Length: 322
Image 1 (cartoon, rainbow, N blue to C red):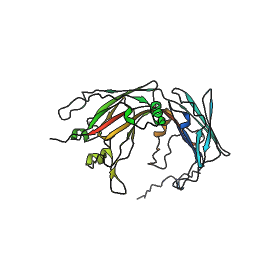
Image 2: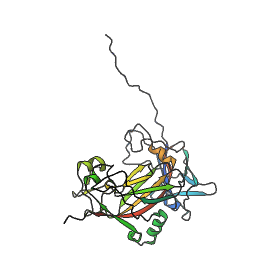
Image 3: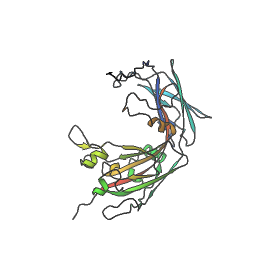
Image 4: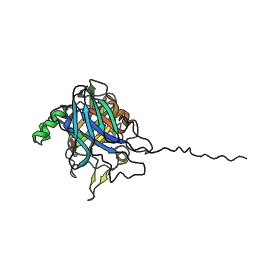
């Protein structure tokens, strides 16, 4: 009788330190708002907690076919570089090239900024039946660009209610809250001028207080929405904002999208191909032996771009039964 054993194949791989660069350009916003992060890579046995590998003294520039934008290191923040030109606004459809050089490394990457996004809320009467209702009604979303939001922020008005918004009710019947395929509260359809790499939804609760938190510790919530977190004082809360990636043309906003009552800012982003390819790897580090798919030539990290449209919606609790 023969004895067989399985021996793992051991391949000696020499670790090579590389330059790691991250930057995302947002269409319709000044390029001066975008930070280029430059650091050295970490070995698999090195701690990331006390990061002493930020890279100072690098030459950092982003260029188009017509212009070159210099980025300077931020005082007292090594490895963070900002553009000195506060007048230029990032444009959709333009290709931007990033170059970073140090004494030991030189890396480059490019991104084409996705086209503009158009949003509309649509009705649907064919997918669900909930409490005798088979129709998801359209709401008024009054979409706007991040440029308008930026102008609102810089004027110091500080009142998001100046933007028009509609109200939806957070319904708790099982047919609304049993899974991620439950009947939504509203549906948003998107279109772009160019095919995006992937789409993202960012739902930011603007009134994420203890009094506004939606308490849900049911099995369905644990399975599909995640576990509620608890702060040092024992108060339950949800992660804010809630972010997810998708590819479908219609986005269903239901119970999973909201962890708080009150006003919400919802941003829908079209990302470039580099962003999509990066997330096709393992950027969340679930498997530390699988690196994300980088577009940084001769280095690691990601140089990407997004185009966003946004709207406000108010989430109201159900009225108590009489």
